[in-house]
Length: 112
Image (cartoon, rainbow, N blue to C red; front, side, top):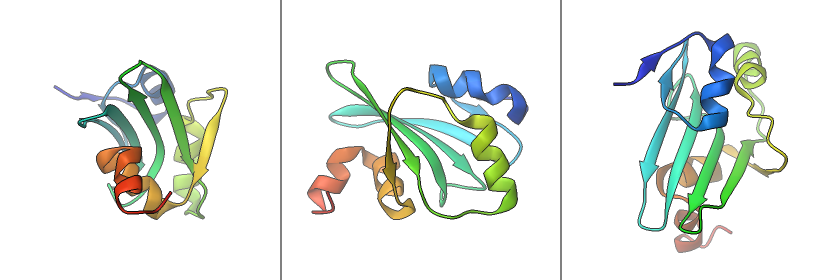
């Protein structure tokens, strides 16, 4: 069961990579052939804000959306930001592909 929480409480869920449903935000986990992908969205799957991909060696890589967004999505971005040491900047289109199938999705499409 996916937990319903307030956005102000969501950062801890993002940092632990736990699925949740917030107010116009949510996070989901997808298992791929090569990794586990955790994605955090604002206003639907069309706009991932953050994606974390954990590989078979248990190493996690974080990606952050660099595109412009609305005032409310900016608020979501600040509330849910995981504050990890390193995040790779990524545009929305590429980040959506990573959210669906991991970095291998970009490699297979020749978008790296």
